[in-house]
Amino acid sequence: MKKLILYALLIAGCIGCSDDYDDSKLWDSVNGLENRVAKLEELCKQMNTNISSLQEIVTALQKNDSIKSVATLPDGSGYLITFSSGKTITIYHGKNGEDGKDGHNGTDGVTPTISVRKDTDGVYYWTVNNDWLLVDGKKVKAEGADGADGKPGIDGEDGTNGKDGITPQFKIEDGYWYISYDNEQSWTKLGKATGDSGLNGTDGDNFFKGVSIEDGYVCFTLNDKDATIIKLPFVSESELTIEVKEPGTLKSLLTDEDMRTVISLKLVGSLNDDDFATIRYWMFVVENVDLSETDISEVPENAFREMHRLKKIILPESCTEIGDYAFYGCQILVRVDVPAVLNIGVSAFEECVNLENIEFPMSSEIKDRAFYNCRNLLNITFSDTLKTIGARVFYGCSSLTSIFLPVSLSSIGTEVFYECDNLTQLTFSGRDIFNNNVFSANNNIKNVVVAEGIVSLGRFMWGANVLTITLPKSLTSIAAYTFQACTKLQEITCYAISVPTLTGNPFASTFSKLYVPSQSLAKYRNSTWQWFCGQILPIKE
Image (cartoon, rainbow, N blue to C red):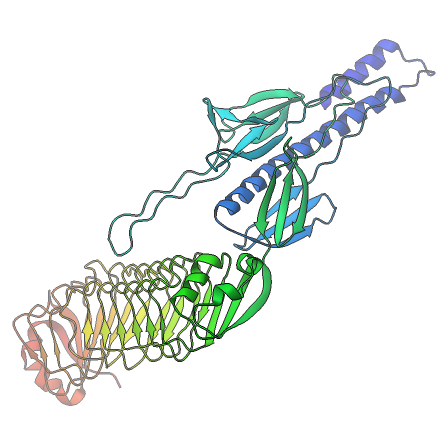
């Protein structure tokens, strides 16, 4: 802009300093060009926003996402779009540039027309000025491709993530449009952004010609030669309640629009496997499912498997079983109401990575890998009827900080708490079930409470970071090597009045302090316990 002002001053100097000279037209030209450049810069900014938004629309189409709301921007220049996934985008509709004044018209500038077009392979690719955007001779995808996940139930690695589509970017430099398709590492000149005179290049229309809502869809019309229309379902926020009088008929009770747009679904009556299949395969955007007024006795195997939009499920009191893989891979599931479930199947909630809290008031058995890799699980509450926990049930639940195992528990599988890196407080309340390799060797459990009822302890195959252990009054014996892994052990509090028998050497090394009942202090000091601790002290009341 400094160059423009200097140029004007030089012309003024050449003409002379006559008092009669009127330089207003010259300054109008300079100011007009200044406004023109500002408008072009704003257009460029809006175009780049639109490009990113268009890519989000194509990605939403690929992932069967939907739209919750369409709101006009306060200045009327476009729309704010909110997807069901929570993402928002802004799109601008184009406005024609103003013509230059008569007698000053130059050659019109070029405004690139960018769009997307579906090719014969079913994939959307970018176009510029109605031609394919090519990089190294290849069309450029406008959508990403997800990698395939590892097979459930197998400890193989997850599939690698697919590469996202490229997002072109535009800029204006020295009066020309430039495009970059390598994240602004290099730029290719496209054409003039202003007319030759600097006063008349036209902006043209932006590449969103219009947005409309028709027949349950939000329709985005693009400004390419084919007037391409991309449709996404427009969802309904209200809950749909359907009574299923005859099992297997749910699909016949739903309209096409219901299946495309319903977010919250409440079912009443009787359901069978076909009805669950309808929910899984045909309710494309459903997030909340209320089954509290159905009479189901179980959630079938794979019933809601990998429903990536499912957030909440409410089960009825008649439901006592959750089948294998029933909620496997429901990645945004955050709430599960299970008032009467007794048995939880294999991998029932595996990979439910956003599940934080769950309570089982009547549980009896939790099978292998039921909560495998639920990495945001903070709290889980068991009933006092729980008898069995299978192998690797909480493997990878890295947000768990404490857990209480009830007195009813009689069997616990291997590697149940492997990779629970933040689990620091563990309370055992039950029988002698600790001989399995329940915890990984590098776990972070610091405080262990062995609750009343346990009479003997086998070897702990874990506990490298354990600092304190609390033992119950019921304890009568500790086997050799029981605490060999507890190399950092500092204190033990033992409530047993009768001194528990130590077989061999239960400890890795001498620990600092042993706290015991005051009436048994002398007995402990005269027992084999004295060989393994620095001080034996009375329990502080």
